[in-house]
Length: 418
Image 1 (cartoon, rainbow, N blue to C red):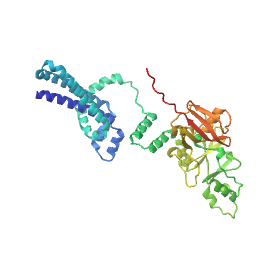
Image 2: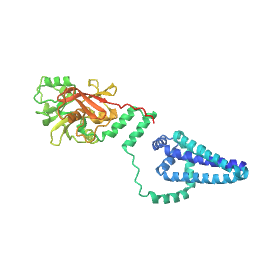
Image 3: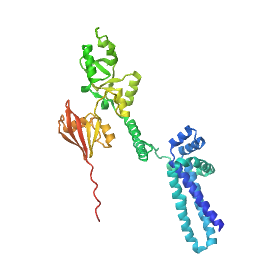
Image 4: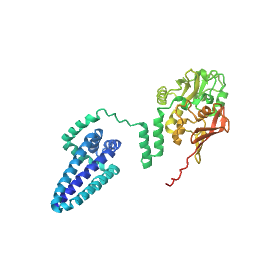
């Protein structure tokens, strides 16, 4: 009887250890192992675990071989011993209880522990898993050689941005990642797909200075708009002489002659299609805080400041002089008051909605004009999707400056009776 108990317990323990090692191996994150190795905690265990995760087929094969041998041999010898001890009549009942024991005690329970408590288990699992792989090395080599015949042309596994963002959202739900971190990481992924024209200050809103103006007039413009830098133009934004910094104006003797062109700094020109990572590198290299954006015909269409670029990563940046209204205000009941020049990509990100693809416009007001086929007027209502409408609340300079976006949430219908 004692031999039967030993065989059953040994079978359950070995199988449970295999299940625990397998679940912990697949659940433990490489980033956690890197962090543990970097701060000196469990360096040897973390190094071994990382090596096994990099070639995960080898430890997986070792676990499966040991588990299969343990279950098969254990069940066989335990069955033989049960026949002698319990008799042939009780053998089916013994088989049922052994199967249930393996299922619950050696599969479900240890795999659940490994998948949920891997944070504390992986340092203790590393050594037995490494030892198992070394002992089973000859058998692992044979199985891997055979399996390569069927997996030789398997496509490489590539983790997409959407999958990474999905994992980050799961981190937010579990409390390991904050909502602010989610926003920042989402902005990082969107950053390299955004172009200068999508974030520029449009030509119509650019405040400029002119060489013929007096210092008094220039300072009045500065006091009115409170910007730090202004393009200096001969006649229009297409004839930019350079860039004037407010500091330059404060150093001028108000009693002496003023020649703004001698104060102008070089102003870079960039195409409207330049991607933000390239633009940021250019602005850092040239130590420029404002660039002129031109279209394919060489016509100036706006300007981009370093602040505009950084806001795409960290969100709105305002100083003590900024009095701008927020781009998006939640009015409740699925209604949002939005600035017309707010980029569509930012609206999609913040409201978790999607506009139609292949649009040739970048802002909400551009989308409204595209749908209307004319300049917007106050009160215009536009359908932007099956559950989305926009109403123009205010118009400025022939564009929708304020829009009320309504998202209709379809009610959940009660299930019908059969």
